[in-house]
Length: 218
Image (tube, rainbow, N blue to C red):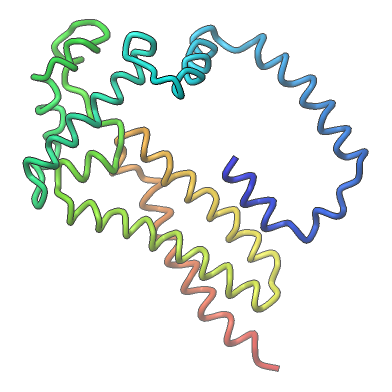
């Protein structure tokens, strides 16, 4: 939904081109796809979606084990941050702190020893708890800088009226934002796409800054 809103804002000048017949085709497609998706969706997916509807009422671990497990990660990670706020408990130590807790035993899927040592399933939480608040803030700032690089480059291309480049930067920005949100649900500080995108944002900003003055010449 966030990507859709960003896309609508970027292409707002072209929205008047949409005609009622276009909306009719879109509604027809939804009418065909939604029942088909429900019919072929695995039962586990349906149960997970239904569990999300009770969040506003305060879901418990007994109603949704996955939500309870993720809540336990936050509790353990928060305790680690309080105990070692500056330097953290050390890289890779979140599973060592989580395993002895009662949460690990309660949410263990198969009651095996290896299943007790679980990661935070949240890159930001894992970095803050294992390396400390200063390092966590630096990581978040790095993600923010990547987003700013794409916004700055897009603004420069819009000033030069290069719509193709601006469109490219918009879609890359949505992709990078989706990646930043994805890190909230999985521990992947070494994910190759993250570091490739971070490097790419700097290159695109540099390219836009170097190209804009040259194109401004008559």
